[in-house]
Amino acid sequence: MSNEFEYDVLYLGSGHGTFNGAIPLASKGFKIGVIEDGLIGGTCPNRGCNAKILLDMITTTQHDVKELQGSGLAGIPEINWKDNVEHKDEVIQLLPEAIGNMMTNAGIDLIYGKGKLVDDHSIKVGNKEYSADKIVIATGAHYRKLDISGNELTHDGTDFLSLKNQPERMTVIGSGYIALEFANIAAASGTKVTVLMHHDVALRKFYQPFVKVVLNKLAELDVKFVTNVNPQSIEKIDDDLIVKTNQGDFKADWVLNATGRPANVEGIGLDEVGVKYNHQGIEVNDHLQTNIPSIYAAGDVLDKKVGKLTPTAIFESEYLTDLFSGVTDKSIDYPAVPSAVFTTPRIAQVGISVDEDETNSNKYTIKDVDLATDWFRMTKNENEGTSKLIYDNHGVLVGATEVSDQAEDSISTILPAIEYQLTPKQIKHMISLFPTIGSESWSKL
Image 1 (cartoon, rainbow, N blue to C red):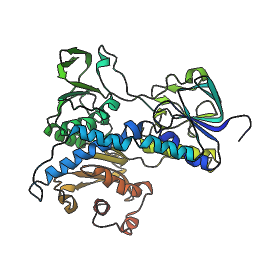
Image 2: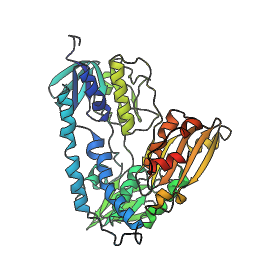
Image 3: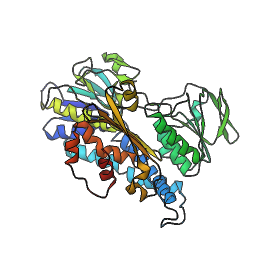
């Protein structure tokens, strides 16, 4: 470490864009500091993916029981909202300390407080400045506020994941994956849900015929969808929250604003130091380096083409470890990045999309797989589901998308075939563990 600076690398934020790379970097002998003004671990472990999947686990279990009525099971359990949230809390509350201990045990200094860039090599926390040879900004993203009267009456995803009392009626503003996943959890638990869509398309980045399958299933849970809605104001009248829109008024006990998550670029000194950013996030080159050579960025705060997902934040953080430690000097090379919507059923996808195939029909062919006839899925009475497998002209799998109760596991199984461009011969030379959803997914290739 240079005597000129207190740290080799100073991270602003403690989420996956930080700790997955900071811990191995510290183990290599680098002096590391991590600045955090909230819960250690950031959004995903504390108020994002982990918390969401814990609440969702009960709804998927209930769904499986419903499907197996008359096939060995009788009686459908009711979801106890309060118990479900308490179970989530029991698990989640362990994570900040566990992640913090992993960092301190690796020799990392945890610095608590709001950090703000001072110059190319310094961050100020309270009245104290900390200096480093390199700085990594990993401040993540936040829920967007609605620019309408009564915005303070809305709640965001963080509020939903800690909601102690189940609302009887919930209005959701937005139709992205957070909106639909939380609508699914609430509706399965018995809440009457109305989803207000800004346009007439939900989950725009996913294959729309599969999205319609999800919307139809949500409709079976009495979820109401209203398209082309522009919220104008929100008022509280007696015990009702009234969302006033161009399509009329909607009453609720609780309003979820799920209209997006902008990058956390405000108030951290970017303008003062001259770090370039736009409405999508911090601008970086192919080494995750900003226009200030000593300052890098990782995670959801980035302006990037790949998905703003936990796995991409981890990949970026680990890439920076290799870059800083001299393991590589090459540009970041993202692998195939899968994404999923954790509704019932799920949608998952990776690689070349069906839309890309349709615009390049001479380059790709699509294989349709009807999963309703898959014997393994029949064990759970899963009586519908479809996957589309996209191949190039050499017969190499280059993309896949699926709608089914187990789509996320299915796509995860076949991911190596896409990333490593396995030939049909190589695929046939692999033996899967049987009987599993993985073996059935692999056998369809």
